Image 1: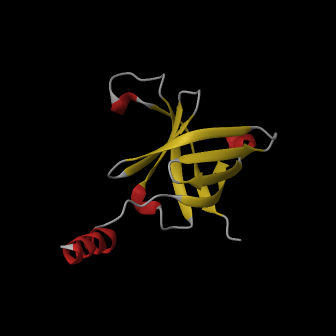
Image 2 (image 1 turned 90 degrees about the horizontal axis):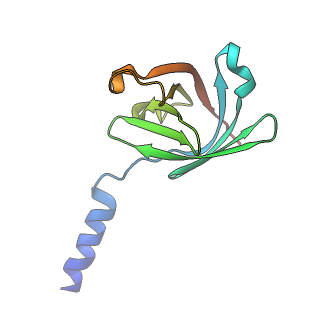
Length: 122
C-alpha cells in the first residue's frame, strides 16, 4: 500500500503540469510620456514589489488565469495585464487599465498606457 502511495505522489509531482508563476527581477518601462513611472519590479509567486525612481515602493498581488496574468497594485484601481504565453520571453508587453473607468463590462475598460517588462539578468 505504501508503494502505491509513493507512486501516486511521484505521478502528481512530476507528470501533472505545474502552474507557471512569474519570478525574478524585471525592469518596467512605460511609453515615452509616462517614463517617469519606470521602475524595477521583483516578482515572487503571488506578490510583487515595484521600486519607483523616487524611492517609493508599491506592492501588489498577482492573479493567474488561463490566458492572462493580472498585476493589481494594492490600494489603487490600476491593473496591469499581459498574456501568459509571453512569460518565457525576456521582454513582456503589458497594458495598464483603470478599473474605475468601465463603460459596460470588460470590453469597456480604458487602457491608460502600455509598456514592457524586461528581464534583468544578474
